[in-house]
Length: 69
Image 1 (cartoon, rainbow, N blue to C red):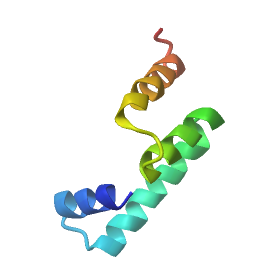
Image 2 (tube, rainbow, N blue to C red; image 1 turned 90 degrees about the horizontal axis):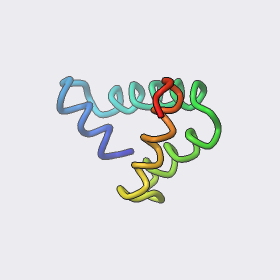
Image 3 (cartoon, rainbow, N blue to C red; image 1 turned 90 degrees about the vertical axis):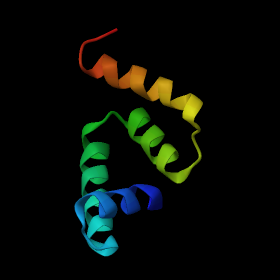
């Protein structure tokens, strides 16, 4: 998550503490809206416990939410 916070800080010019609050707010919103298995994958991705190879599964699950198969 630190990498995402730094990116948001750089792109927006926000101080890192405010960027972290923004990132946490968006992530918490997404986790509330996503089905539990996808929310867990999102947490794993941000914690570094899920690798880039696993992102395809996350993307596939998200596309199913929007009616695409």
